[in-house]
Image (cartoon, rainbow, N blue to C red; front, side, top):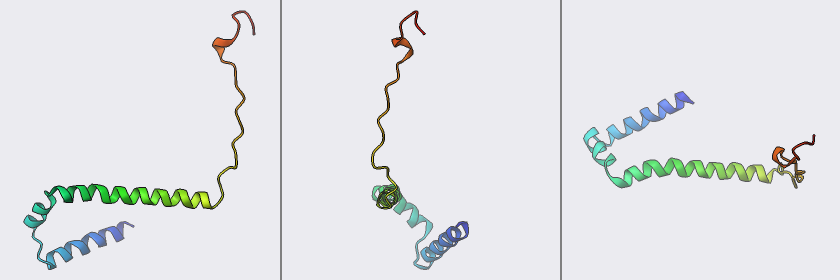
Length: 85
């Protein structure tokens, strides 16, 4: 996975240099509010979509319990009489 990530970064950097994007242009582009919002929202949206997909896959598999049994109420320590055990 690390090798693929490194290869992707190198490929993107090479593509940017071939297209003529200079570091100054990239810095100017990164200071725009729309770019900053996109850098935050795109990974967040992908994370939420993957989470929803995993929940749907788990539910469709039928691994959810039909009904959980009700818990029996336990008396708490403060509800006991003072002298009784």
